[in-house]
Length: 119
Figure (cartoon, helix red, strand yellow):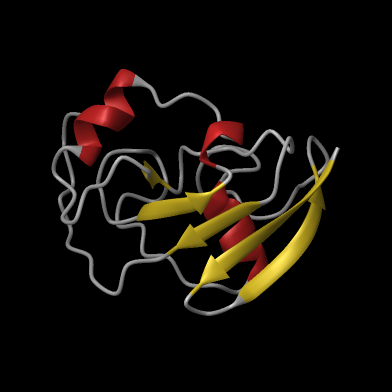
């Protein structure tokens, strides 16, 4: 299933086929973070993409319902993210299914809120 992912404000986008995207090793396979890295779009990820901080917090302005469901661990980490919205996700944990195009807003700020007790 083909879909387009667009990163704002960089206005960088690419067309992908769900289930066939290799590339970088940061975040879950085919995550928003992995796609951004492969495209050369910078999203900070202090914990290396393992879901143990909130620095890769993004806001999914379109296509939110086509993402995998957030885990309890991800929701706990998002609680410490500045500027939290109902469309907030950690880029390292959010994986588009390909059911619709996705638009991702990368906030202009971040802060390192790493949790040493990630498991």
